[in-house]
Image (cartoon, rainbow, N blue to C red):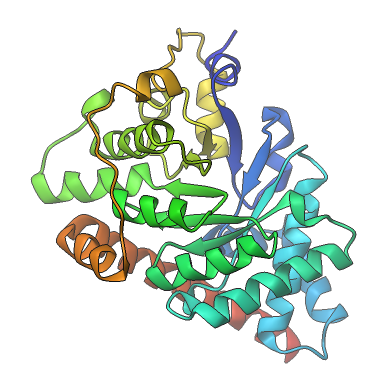
Length: 313
């Protein structure tokens, strides 16, 4: 078996792309998107028709309303190619607005259900701010499943699990980027700080009996992926999926519920004050969360601009 096939024995594989035509050959279970991936996709001739159709069919809607239909159109196309779930992101500009996130999540699910897609096949992606986590708590009670993204620290992960979030997406590569830039050092294998962060979160969840799924995300190389073999899910770009498929080197399981029991971890209870203080004490997590929200906001503005340009053409 190649490395991708071996990895699938331990971990659910998720495709991280807006380019759904590249998904089928890797046979992932789930797929994820974000504003940057959707923006990149609609600039290609292959997918521009989805943008044009959304503008044409929903000309009476606001720009934000048209974008919502576009996101659901992409999600619907992706779901034709996978057996599992697609993650669709809420507007990053709502990251500190609990009622706004809740309203957006309910609206996106309503659009999916109107298109004949059951909510069980959709995860609503939300930034792991305190406000976003509170929104997830509300949405999960509505049976709307949430994928908590832009997650860089154990306190974020604990708060998400306490809120009952279905899934979290800790960002391996962005943590690696920060430490590489901060220290000037190269990291590989088990010494990679991004890998260490996800292992710590996974072990915490499994040791203390949380049901929330852990999906490692934002990979820079296949080494990071292989070090997390056994994680509940891993969301991987088509480029790295191809590299795994092209290699026949042995893959060994690195994470399991049994191994987690031996982890030297203590269970924490976090209220809002403790959460904010612990996140503030982590310079990497604070900076990468803010940076990620800014980047997704900027790409959302660009996507709005493309919609408005078509409306006015």
